[in-house]
Image (cartoon, rainbow, N blue to C red):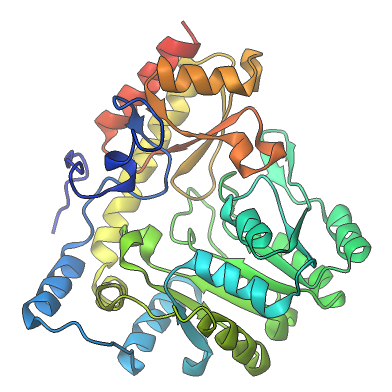
Length: 390
């Protein structure tokens, strides 16, 4: 089946956070939202059909998963990433952010420091602060147009603050790094040496570009086996964020029990029945749609990369190795971030994520979601050019 990713689908009136709550969030009602990380594409037809079949049954009672569900998850990760795990290692949660918060509660005490690497997906910091812990950042270093980890600082922060837990982003959102096996191994060795539990959010794993290939942290750093939680979900890959399903792979039975107890304490830890159905269908039957989507998104990245390089002097695109979220550096324009944000909203009529949302190291940047029809992206880039680079 051939999918049409050029189709513009009207999402207004569907309670879409992107569209139906623009004014409630205090933004101009005529902005184009290109911030939150969902896609403007209908999901794979086999996923839709599986949910229709389940809908026709008409009963949506308490739902649990069995081995067929686990086998679907195993299949995707074995075939795409050569990662295998035992069935009892899998613990479900509604979302990965819920998983991160659960890990914070399970493995630290109020007042404890938790390590992150800013600029990073802002819920990493939020789940730490909201649970009464203290975020400590091993900031990424921007060098020659790409970000790298500062391993000396990483180890220094771990030792200085007696870090017990690290929330790690692989691939990295928003800077678009696909970490190499060598980088992952070095991080793993440091954390293993100091007894740090690493929670690895790998939700963007299915979107790597060019010669980059996603490596599961545990495959690169097997020393972390007893200090490791892998957080995964089909929600980014198949545009299923509203269906509330995530999977967590925890090899160590003691950590798994601690995590499970912590996730059950709020009395909200079950997945949505449609999320379960969609996850199985996506991993079992979604390959054709996924491959066509990747090809289309690669075209969008080429378009954005060429446009910024050729027509937007003073703006630099950090070339993405992964994710469909582009990290744009506006610092060359010499404008304060407040003015960049104002012009983006009021003049370009675009709603992006300001870089400082991801930590102080992100100031002067903007995050742009390019998982949309090409005509939408072309229009957005042209509006940015007219606003900032006349």
